[in-house]
Length: 469
Image (cartoon, rainbow, N blue to C red; front, side, top):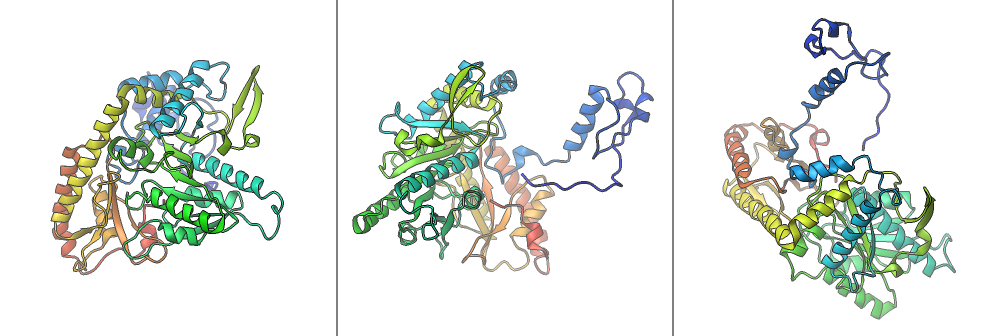
């Protein structure tokens, strides 16, 4: 969430249509509420609603937002359940024991889905999203390392570090900054756009708290090779004695791969994987915001990080950065798991992958673009302009598609591949083959105009980039 500064003193008041008044058409003419300070008095609820509603019409259409991984459609029954639970405080487990029970069931289901050796022994919790889940997992890694190195930490010579690909989500940079951990990032090289196992092990030493593997990179939708990474770390341990755990950031892929890529070994089947996180509000198919963090067993989550709070008369263990939050999203997650089951999830995710692969092929067939990925892992693919296209660039394409309502991000890759600028499309549940056809048709209509440009028209790429994670 961005930080916001104060407003200017000359901000104009809101203009109120006379018909916004509830009974008297001329009554609303006297209303002109300020935008950046509290109004002097109340107004009718319908008037307040209409003012806010009208302003929000200028937001983009979430269903046409092909930048976000976040769920933008759920069944009406899920919405009704969320409405019934939005006033329930998740943290108050004594007052809302059934909501707490649904959270426990979700953790058990995910532990089973991710092949925990003993799902009943796996430990986990819900969060506000994967960012909080990653923070919790990182805290556990750091504390376990600190406990193992209590004889020399804290000291100037023992600064903890975390190894990861440069393609990780920004939350990992935040974790390293907030918890004073040195980030060690594996750069992109050539056509490799994510972590390389051998390069990752070369960055590890006695101060490494863990290695993060991403199951579904936000840059291009590709899976990182978790099993190969674990094997490389096994070899490192044989040579040096360093026993370094792996955390799998499965923000998207952990709710996708188990249903379609059942032969892919990435989860708790690998003994070196100590923890996994996911976003329920991504391919978990729930409105934001809900995430999940799971540990193989309580041995991976130091007891001193778990707070036991006497809250409203009950002893409540909690591991979270937040305290009060609504139970609605957790209830919606349980509803979705119950509603779909394995076969239902498989059908939904297969449809998304089919749409992504077909759309990628149709965009490639236009002749102006080349694909980096094809949507055959996550239903996400990145593409750039073909080498012979000089009249326009990906930022021009993104800007022109926005004129038709499509939000398609254009962005530059990080260090060692800053030369590569791409567009990326995320296919989610609700983005149908019909919508994909409309997108291709709009793109086809734009291409003749783009080809006639004398040169790319984006002067300020920083301002044009609408993607920062």
